[in-house]
Length: 279
Image 1 (tube, rainbow, N blue to C red):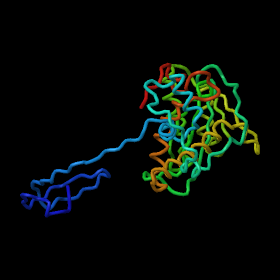
Image 2: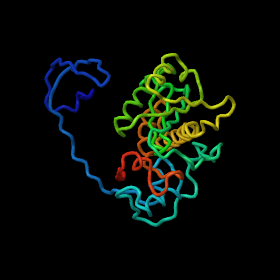
Image 3: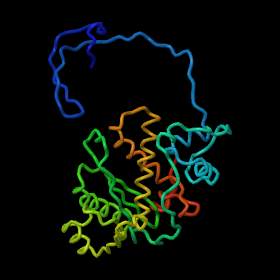
């Protein structure tokens, strides 16, 4: 489909309905054959598969962890083809203002999947995504550190997101979710939310007012995700409205990254009991 009539070698007027991706309908003015001139590429350049490239592919994760992933073969197929030194300055990382975590990270965690799930809601974001989302809600399994994120158009959708997460996680793991940790925000304290968790036998744990470190795992995750999204948008030069696409791919990658609370494995492998493959 093209607006350029002069590209056609043959052409005849013909009105045909065309359905677009947003389900709207447009109509063609005509149909015909287009012949393009052959194009020759005189040179092709590729980026070296080095530490800097993997740093960018793994959502600007720190070089030490990326190097450890490669040396320990935590992801199948991950390798270096160049030993060049990593970039001394990463502009997208600076744009994301990545810095040390505000709360100390605890290495103590529950040994059984879904024994405890941490959750935090982030937003509203200053710019809505293309689908109209203004928030996201994060769920992190304490035992495996596997995270799931759901975009929301309003805070009141948090309850539905939790039900979707609970059903999915319990089906994947074959065990019941036993406890939920949150910051006692209004989105977690609706009558429907409380009644649902009571009937499901889910213990509710809440952080104390002005003590956000008690829900630090989920809050740190959301803060870091916000920084990584900024870095991804900066590097790709996309407008802020693409944050929804960024967070979807970022969470997929994040679950493949090592974490200090898991020795010699990744959240993906701890959750699914299989090693992730180089994507």
